Amino acid sequence: MDLQHFPDLKLLRIFETVVKNQGFANSQQELNLSTSAISTYMSQLESNVGMKLCERGRGGFSLTYKGELYYQETVKLLQEIDKFALYSAQVKGELNGILKIGILDSIVTEKHFPIDQIIGQFSQENPYIYIQLQVHSPYELQMGVLENCYDLAVGAFFLKMNGITYHPLHKEQHWLFCSDKHHLFEQRHLTENMITQEKMVRRGYWSHSELAKHGFNNSSASVESMEAQLILILSGQYIGYLPEHFAQSWVDQKRLKVLLPSTFGYQAPFSLIMRRGRSKDPIIQKFRNIMSKYI
Image (cartoon, rainbow, N blue to C red):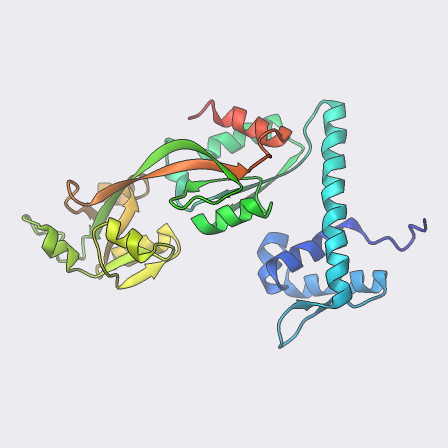
């Protein structure tokens, strides 16, 4: 076998990432490269293999027919290389490889799940494991686990998916808030009807039935992250739900107020999820063992 023209593994991993994210611009953050750098690497790969792998331009990103075939084999090859790297590390008595973790946003202030401490100890004990940590919505986290984009994920998942195992962790308390700029902030005698008439901001991934469960039939705005939700609430124009731990510092500053806690409030059950059949992966087992010391 002539290895002279065998492509650099770095180029193959860039190619895999570009296809997974459907374009150069969408891959910038994960690769930590500019679009021009990604384009240069992709051109270099195409030059090495002697064929055009993808179309890029005004029409958007797409694979050529040969590019699709090449991508399928690239994925298989990289998976085997990762398995071999893990095996080699196990022979030496140390773990090596990549751990891809997905989480919901705002989890950093959740004392029941100190993700920073868990990852800190894991990285200290396993210095040869590369960590990839990404924040996404519950649906994206579950799909990512099913498609092996994440080795594991942590979040609140109200709709369960086949092929995923769910391990209960803790329950996250949510309250309904308004800000000090909202006219309800100084109201002493609030009623449920008064509150449900206000403009409310909801999570973008909530269905209409999910919104109704939390006491509202309509919303006036939607967001995809807790930070965005906080911003709209702080504007004084909307009320909305936030995790207690995330909102606490703003409550302490008297910038936020809980509205009728006896009526509006719910607990989101958090779980650790992974693709069925992967619980015995050495890296995943190691992470879970460390996590169990903190929760």
